[in-house]
Image (cartoon, rainbow over all chains, first blue to last red; front, side, top):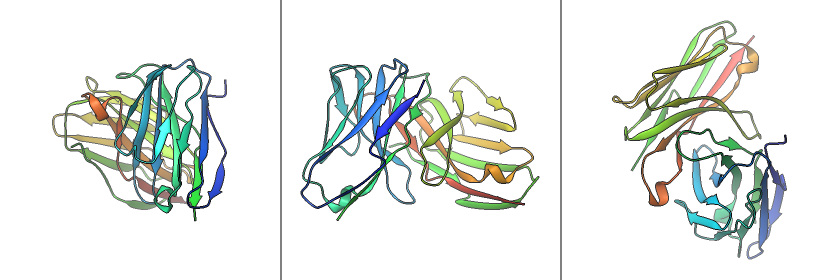
Length: 113
Length: 116
C-alpha cells in the first residue's frame, strides 16, 4: 500500500512552459486535494475533487487546471507557468470528507524561472 | 474567514523535556483539527486527528487537546527526543460549502529542534 504518490519530485520550468503534476492514491479514497506551500507559510488549497468526474476550485485556482477521470488519479496541470507558481505542491486524499484524516503525498518542488 | 495561528514559531529544547505547542483558530465551526509533522523537504505525516466532539487524542508520547469554544488546541510532547525535530502544523477542517468544502486551513507551523 503506497498511499499517495506524486511525480516528479523536482522540476524547473521556464516562464510560459506547461507541465502536469501527477498524483495517485491506492487507498480507494473518494476525496482528493491539491495544495501549495510557499516558504514560511501554511498550505493553501488549489483544487479538490469529491469523486471521479467531479472537481471544484479551492482558494487559489488561477493558473491551474485539474481532471479526475479515475478514483486513483488526480493530475494538476499548470498552463503558462509564471514565477509566482514557484512552490511546493502537495496532493492529499481522504476516504470521505468531514470526519476523515487527509493523507499527503511527498510533494513536488517546482521552480519557475 | 478562518485563520489559524501557531505559537511559538520556533522552539529549541534539550532532550528529555516535556513541551507544548499551541494552535488557535478564529472560527469554531469546525469538523475536526489535525496535527501534522513535516520533516525538511518531505511531505506531511498525520499525527493526530481530533473530532469537534472530542476533547483530546493520544498517540504514544503525543497528546492533543481541543477546546472548540475558545478556538484552541495544544499538542503535548512528552520526553522529547532529537528525532522529534521537525515542523509541526495544525490544520482545521471547517464546516461550510463552496471553496471551503473539505478544505483544511493550516497554521504556519512551529519549528521544533530537540538537541541532545
